[in-house]
Amino acid sequence: MAPPFPAVVLDLDGTLTVPGTTRAAPGVVALVEALHARGVPLAVATSASTPVARRVLDELGLLGCVDSVAGRGLDGVDAGKTAVVGEALLGLGIAAAEPGTPMLGDSPVDLAAARAHDLVPVGVAWGGSRPDALRAAGARVVLEHPDELWALGAC
Ligand SMILES: [Mg+2]
Image (tube, rainbow, N blue to C red; front, top):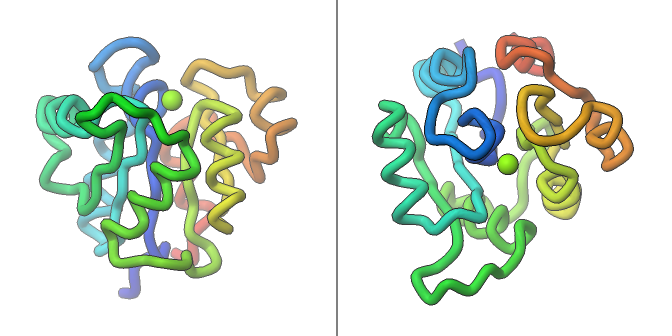
């Protein structure tokens, strides 16, 4: 069976985790594990530093599922989410995303970055932003639960 998405890009805080914590948001661990099991290349793009992001993913048990982790550099410079998403894609060997590649995020900034890279902007309702704010920022859909992502795929 073909992977249901060409790749998936994920924000970290408020998307994989409960906002402001390192605890997994309900349902996301199962989603990431299932995407990985289906052969979907996975990238995390975060404004946290890359080492912190790797540690959080490790604590969630997801580091082995994620193929690319991009965050703020060790120099502390935050290049902005659009640049970080580009770096996350390059980590997957992707210079230009295939149509139907979703990016999940809980902030309007995530959705703007997704649109800048021709990713499908997918908002998540369990993070730090209200669904109407995510829709106003261009979210094609706002997920109430991680499992709703499958409805976007070809599966
Ligand atoms: Mg976030």
